[in-house]
Image (tube, helix red, strand yellow):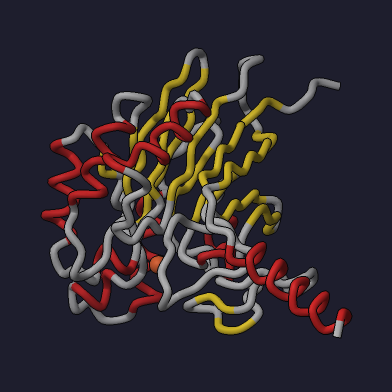
Length: 279
Ligand SMILES: [Fe+2]
């Protein structure tokens, strides 16, 4: 009897720990070529909010963002979704732009609203920079970083273009055409095309979309399922090296009973880009 009670207690504790949804801050440090300064450049990666509100006026998320003192914030897609008000994202954008410059690319769910241009315009009114299929030089202190953004391949379906994958590669080629010695960083929603990003010459790709695989499993499985990759996805969450390129995937900020997370806390990701140590 005592053993049964102990087992039930242990099971309950395990379930409670697994279902814990408190916001987590995850930090990474990546060495990029051609960085000049002694101070890291910090990017904050937020993805897959899916219209969720983290406290009144997004205060939990904004407090977490402010505490990281980022040099720039990147919104890597699926910030909203069909049937949701833009308002939680607008509140977030308003707060974030008072902290650092903010850049946005569209994820599949932003596009599935069938109103992503209006959503982008609403973000731009809050001083968010649309990086949809564009590259810009991001200047932070004495560093210049080429920051590129690429919309989700789903846009080909929305705009009734022919071949989704060919179109994605074509847009990637155009966005990555910028030349020069700067470190090259790509913001895009989907991690599963990592080989293409590396081939396009990026040093770092920042992605979302996977929600960490929803259920975190012990290595080497790591994630249970990710849309676009299926069960036991190769790219689920965290840091990867793909043909020399760094890739960091956020677990996202979404929570819902229809897509439950287990041992998979929503996260704000801070990425410090640093110079190679001189030999
Ligand atoms: Fe997505």
